[in-house]
Image (cartoon, rainbow over all chains, first blue to last red; front, side, top):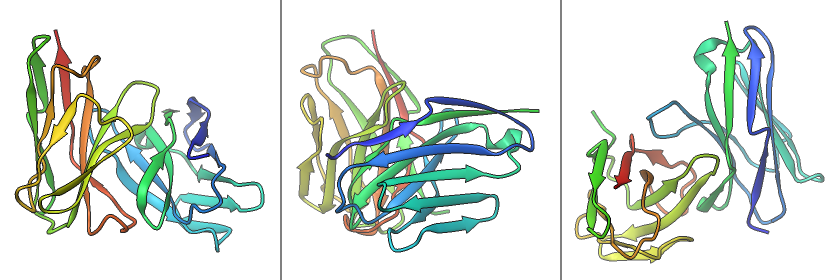
Length: 111
Length: 113
């Protein structure tokens, strides 16, 4: 019940395309859903986050869509660029306490 | 220049040796964390600390030990009891354990030969 399931494991997208990464959770007590971006050899960095009282949040080319009833949330990267090539982790926590991370998605954007 | 530093970036040790990974932060954060990252897996929590001189086990604490003698420092010791220590280790901090955003260091890649 504490797991966050993330898919796909890897993703290849053409430059300018839309990258979509999905996550699902079971614990309805989760109240904070961040996405982290990690480049090779670096630590993850917070990209964008959402709370369950909001169905969508957009920051630049990055959008989180949140479906509370389905217990799913997804990251959309519009106009994907080669510089977006990285590993993306979804996560969930209860009040920021003990964040549970998904397994990660390796995104490669072809130039 | 605020942030989290981890040293060394790469570390090699012989099997059976204990090794200590350094983590320092100058963000004035109360909470600090250690995660382990393996290929194809998400980050798994080893230990976390909410305040100086206090720390709690995470999901995979066996074979690891920590100390929190100073607010800015949270070293992790990988002991010989850890059966599969080769991994990428990440240190993070946040304003408090119940704070939403965690800030990560650059990581230490430990290889046990």
